[in-house]
Image (cartoon, rainbow, N blue to C red):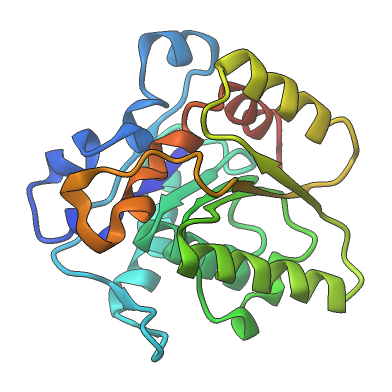
Length: 231
């Protein structure tokens, strides 16, 4: 089962917006992906923004409710609990970071996309399996990802760090992913090199942040690697 959590722009909206706002949910539900990787795709929608990372690092009850939602889905449907995959962008990334750290046995693997959280609460990410994307032009997310890498360094944990170009073709992305996954390292950090993400004029000050989400979901080789992981 894939659990995808969208960004805060989907909070308080119709449930369909979390499905259609970008590629994050739909990419796992295409006919092509489902034919090769049959899975449930669970996409919770929230009535409000469920956390605050602007200096206070506070959460609402909906973060822990998400864990209970995953447990409910696992008990109510034919879910292999050794193959639950956590995905999220921005608010969804932060929520998935929190849950992955707090419940190390919850996910088989995670894809964190352009989000950050209080690194002092994220030591549970060590020894876990994930890919963490952040655009270098998205200052908050990139700094947050860098703090997690610094924590790994301080604790002597292995990880890979890779700088990718947002203009690469699918084949170039697949080649870079194959090289990254050639080792046994399970914690993988990827930054989109500054200037290679095309911002949208419609996104204001969050132009690079919002625009970078879908770049991660163009990496089919990363998606395939995630689905090879089991708890």
